[in-house]
Image 1: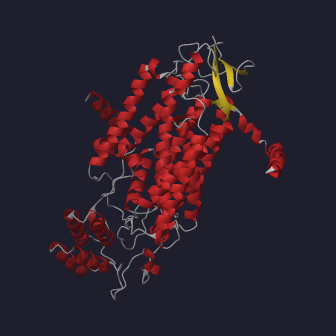
Image 2: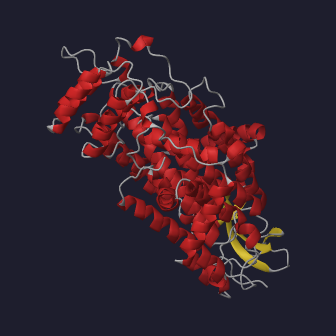
Image 3: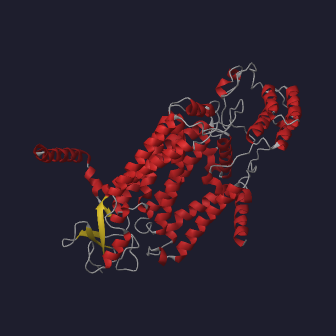
Length: 196
Length: 384
């Protein structure tokens, strides 16, 4: 407890001595609605169970002073869908509302690069801007087992066998225990005797 | 059969001549300097295995760099392209990812080994400092690598980094997006990841290796020596005429003498190479079985992820004390590590005779493990 208090004191002093941390949260009304809609989509993708944060971001979007580039009617419809628990339809409407999903003819937008219409007029990201036009789903790591996987594992097994064989062959002639024993022994090799 | 027996010496002779010719021009024989035999054990080969991980990272990194596009609009998509469209791209990326984890773990274990064997003591203080610096660079490489995939996790890591950069004031100018405001900071972190950090690493690694040659690999504190503990500094090494070839008499600065079984450094290298093959095989299997996912494209103003596990201990401190704790925690850890050879002036090297150092070392390790586990058990919280 004392250590924790001491650490807290150090960090408090540190935070006083150093410039104040800039907070990302400013006046929400000044944040462009497009940014807030993107944040809501990010919550849908990353933490779909956090409906409070999704709703909060969309409410802020509708109250934003800068609604340029956002179809607020589509946002309203999305909010209704989300209230009904339909995250998929809600997300599609939100993406439509910011023009991030312009093609609804069956082509599913997978990559950022595929957001072709309108993308060319979007200015390129600078500084710490994310440059995200659409929030993609996570691409899971492990897919179905393939023949390539089998070959790679087989090569790895051969490599491991070779490595084990060589590490056994190149092992030290004496263990630490043997060295400890023989170094102090008055007769036996390798040391044969202790000096001093 | 007889032709074979006649032919062998000729082959042997030709090989020796070839090796001799190469050695005459490249001086490879310099690598045959003597090291203690115990250096060929696995625990004493952890530094070499860290270097093996670095080599795998360099190889896979060069391949990945051919397909990665370090601009914010397409960085995440290019990683997906590597995974889905480039032949063996998934495996290469996964091997790169797992080699990075291995390098962090192996470097940490190597530091712990050096600490508990007191191998950082005189005259090896400078090499300890270089080793700690390389450990710091490993963390930086892990961090920048996390950001490069430009998903939500990477972007949040960057956001934390930018805030810490502000805490540093003018010192943190490089971590500010205003430093080069027309250039995406992702591009600058990419240059750091593939050029600045590896470049520094190679320089430090070279000096590290040269200092190992200069001071030799330290003796094992558990092997008998005339003093209660073996001092780290070696004044002279003298081959004994009346004993088997690899046994030498080592004389320390205070004039104490002990016997040591030695082998050429090349034997250490070949054992590390053998262990390295096993390591590569293990990492390859893990890479096939557990390829890392690619997260969603990032959005600013959202905090929903945890950092990579090597930073979890900092994340717990941040949960408790706020953002400055990331900076404070890092400074305290590396301050302690850098101070070790200057604070611990006890010439004894066996852990049994260094209770204070052992208690402090174990306390630091335990604290980091507990803080790491705590973050593993919590859900991410918003800090920025």
